Length: 51
Image 1 (cartoon, rainbow, N blue to C red):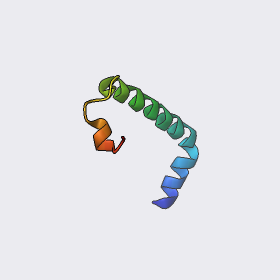
Image 2: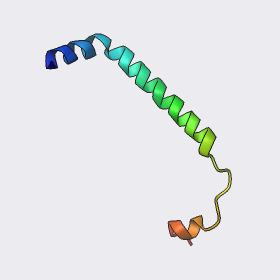
Image 3: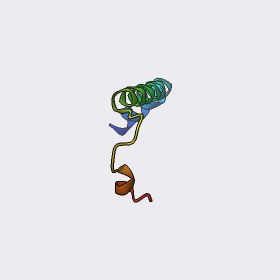
Image 4: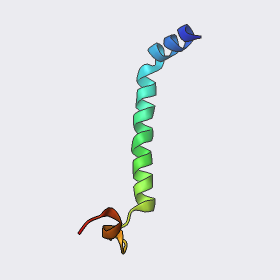
């Protein structure tokens, strides 16, 4: 089984890396669009311990 996985990763390593990089970029952009807050909510400084 290890030999099969090693052969697969060796053969398709570049494509796996490209897909992983693309997935990381897409997930960051989509989360920022949904959860981006332009202003800090009330009490965040108290919660974070800021003075």
